[in-house]
View 1 (cartoon, one colour):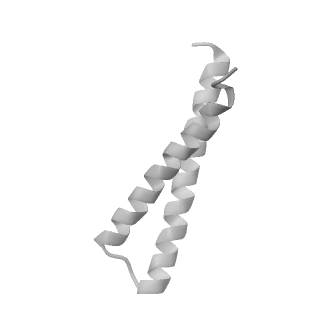
View 2 (cartoon, one colour):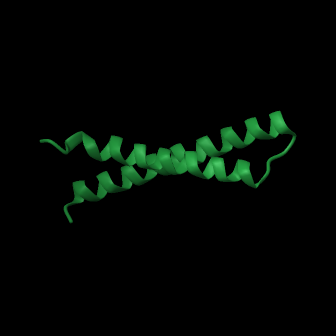
Length: 68
């Protein structure tokens, strides 16, 4: 693996995890404020949103050089 590729993979991973973590915290706070807590359905929704954001983050960072 070339050093540049390792940096790109690390950046991709960090961006995806950061997006998922920030969204989970934000959405958990909104649900807690609105409902006075959160249920299993809320946790499932947070997980689904976080997973989609991980995919979007990976595609956004890896897709930059995909066609070159």
